[in-house]
Image (tube, rainbow, N blue to C red):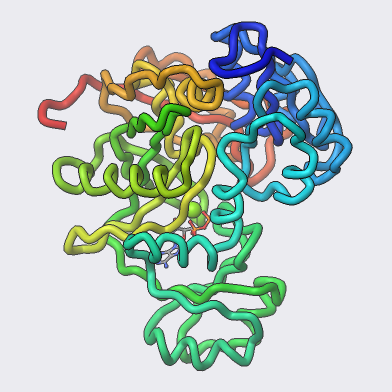
Length: 363
Ligand code: ADP
Ligand code: MG
């Protein structure tokens, strides 16, 4: 392995997970002359088409993780449900970025909320639920409409059930697989936003302009920049992002999802220690994309400016949305990005398209 940071061209970046995020990281890394090694159970995963080395097998396999670490100058991951202990053991001298602590915090919704509240950041009110008989008391305590979520392994709205005092608690608990859970009070938000930010090895922080996000059935549908997120709201969201990055001694890109209350108050919903779907617009509208800044951060390069040169709307292409391909590529101010997935399935993220317009003044 090439030793020490910054990594020189020819060094290898290892990534646990070969989905679309791994693929886009690989494409960004290639521009610096880095090679990419990917661990994924599927030899036909999106990143396999662009990786230099594919290691095929389960994410939690100690021997395969050790193999990934041994061919890599730095190891990163494209999703937060990587088992931390086998990864820690497998790393040897290879650095993991973002750090394992960021994985531990973001893997468990209870640990995540406790961490955020502990550094003075507001979230939905919540209670940990370990058994169904704790649910009634917690519901009374929080009052009103709530949402029950599995503590771990939830994504794209999976492992969640809406619930209120009139609901049948056992049904809700069963519908999320009786797993340890968190009960959150519903935040009556005006809209949802996210901030994509990066912290370099030298502690420098950059944050992209926040995006306004719309979710359908728990899956991100679109991100609009700047949307309704300007001025003081944007400044406050960025400040929170910076605080989270510093407290985690973070290196890499992070995605932070927020609810904006009707009075403009900010609540963090969740943090993702990786590049984030609501930041895909950065490849079309910014000097340097979130993927480039993640690679720069973990490789020990200086971060690039998150400057934005367009307003934009990013739409996810979910399931058969991708059949609009011919029309999408015909639009001259749109950038289409497909993930190389051969099979279209309902609810599956197949790609995204970012439509740009001239920068509005005062954004
Ligand atoms: P996932 O990990 O699946 O993205 P989230 O916790 O982000 O799960 O929930 C998905 C979506 O469900 C959110 O983006 C939001 O629209 C809605 N939601 C989740 N929790 C709450 C809450 N406490 N109050 C209001 N809406 C919520
Ligand atoms: Mg979410």
